[in-house]
Length: 159
View 1 (cartoon, one colour):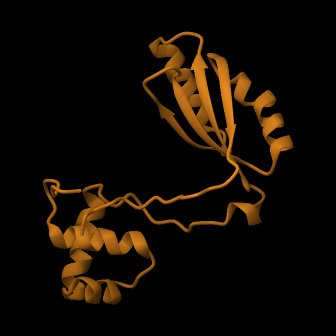
View 2: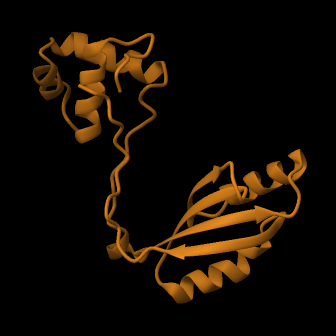
C-alpha cells in the first residue's frame, strides 16, 4: 500500500497494523507501540471505528477442533442474471452459517463461495440439501482444499 487513504495518517495506519496483529491489545500497550498517549490512541481508535476503518473484533477459531476442518470453495453459475435472481440468491446465502463468504465475481461463473464442513460426507449432504436448492443455481463446481498454505485476514498497510 503506497498511498495513505484520505481521512487517516501514518499513525492511524500504525494503530490499524498493530490491532490486526492483536485485537485484544490493551489501550496502554497500543499507545506504547505507536508512541502516543493512551488518551490520544483511544480517541484515534474510536474515530477509526466510527469512520468504518475498524469493522469489529473477533477471535480466530481452530476449525479442525470444532468440526469444520474441511474447507471447500464452490463456483456457482446462476440460470439467469437478473436483479431479482441475484437478490434472492444473496438473501438465501445469508442464512447458512456453513457459507462463510460469498463473492459476486466477473468471469465464467457468478459467485464464489467459501464453505467449511466437517468432512466430505457433510459437504455432500450440504450440497444436496442447501447448495443446489439455493435460488437460481444452475451449475456448481466444487474445490475441496487439500492444504491451507496461507490464511489471513490482515491487510498489507505498508507501515
